[in-house]
Image 1 (cartoon, rainbow, N blue to C red):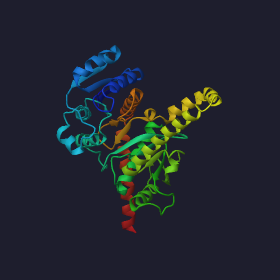
Image 2 (cartoon, one colour):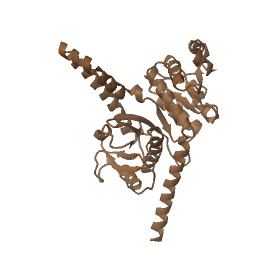
Image 3 (cartoon, helix red, strand yellow):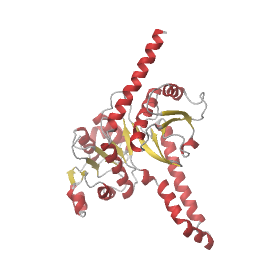
Image 4 (cartoon, rainbow, N blue to C red):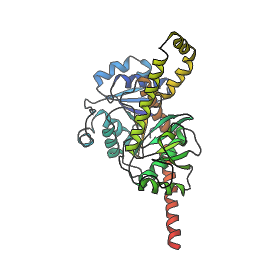
Length: 350
């Protein structure tokens, strides 16, 4: 990793690129003036945009490519054609040690495929998982997987739990995060075989987290677990449901406060609290999902993120790069494997 943090930015990835990428970097630079940014994309477009902000221009480099991963490009096609794209070059910069982390708001499937191909998974990890923060009554929880793996074995779920707990210790500042498996019920006999096997293994693991067992969808917002573990199919549905519910609640509140003169007066009295609620539930506030389990840091931004949202994703990349997350995960995986070896020896002796 470079002595000074350098963040590689896929400047052409996302619904509102490259504008939000450049503006987001400018906003993040204010909070992190010591960080350098490398933009990958069309130099003719990017150069005048970056030059508008002298402070950003002073800490930025532009690497030209006119190849862009389209939103509908298949993962296989991205592997064949996308390694010289703005997305592929940003990930390659992490591989080659030129950048501390890469951030992209582009095609999720393509980003996962390119990242896994270029960076490979960490020893002890079969599949990388997408993790992000979710708003709860108590603050925030980390949830994974959010769409990278549709079907998961008990090995995958256990690995996700170990990685998610390490992530929560660093990002949420928790010394012993509570880990829960998302299931259709809290009883031990509920759910399919993989989730039940994973629960048995996590109950017996001697790791720096507390396993709270199965949790249901309505437990997510209550903050029952600091780390919520799921297969990617279920996790992605849960994520989109939470985001849609947040939009619904804010829309209903806006309509309710506009019904009458008295309700408008009520809005004026309550607008401080409503602003706080909006900020807490806004997906842009929690933007920046990491692809855990790779030999390098890759952060996925929402494709539709605004400037503040993309800046948040960059902030996540900077925080994780400075926190040695990979080393923490490796240590916990080693401890998990030691527990498994010890259990196997005890069984053989018995």
